[in-house]
Image (cartoon, rainbow, N blue to C red; front, side, top):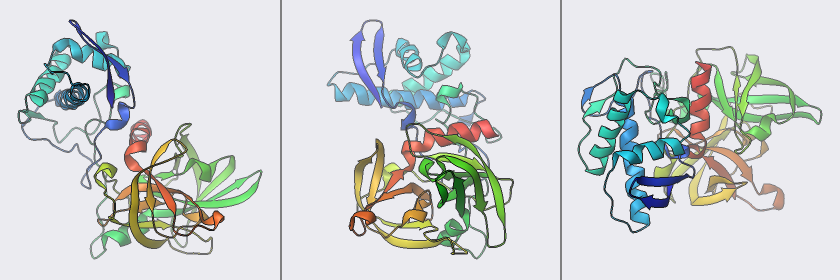
Length: 334
């Protein structure tokens, strides 16, 4: 969230604290288009949507500090600077559209503009891309396939060779040829292979790994593998039913699943916001998806206490915590 640092007549001064991670979660499914908002379409409407998001953040910050809120155009410049955007490089009409969205949000008006459905790439500067959801292609289950069966089909086995020997983990497709997994699964790898089905093993290349989060993206040469949709992990509640999918053993020809519930939604592991889950997972499950009842990924299975004789006490990194990293590198890979 954006945290209030000081207030002055010239507008707010802001301290950037996880601002980029507070983007809304992606749409559950759909074609490779922008999820439309209410209102008429406009070529600069992505700036309008960003303005509404910033207005929501600003109102929350004022409320948290017990201050009366009044929208001021100067606040937009301060907010964009806190997001590492050079305001001087932005066209005046884009700033105006952003301000319109800011005002409409803070005065609780309905959305006036929506992003054209033909738009497939973000027009925002890279530091703030992701405030409008570009939905994933082919994320719907195939005909006669359940949501869980689709999630199982989208999950793959990752085999790694390193100086320490062989290892394996799990991952899942989020875009054509691109797989999300844990960073620790591919740490120190000299070679990476991905088993995409019972007959096919493909070489993989590392696209990116996060220094702050236990997440990595690898690429394989395939375009037609099932993709797993991502859900808004902030909407998950304690007691919700979930499934952990992955490859706990190397000799499994297909992914397996275990069922349980969310035990806690506010755990932190190695600095990552996590779900605590009361289901059984093992080492090979690392990097596989934690899915909700609709078969969408809400987390990445990453850590358990089985080695300490503690049963069904495991953790999954929340999708929203790593969503900016995923979106950034998916956009760069297009």
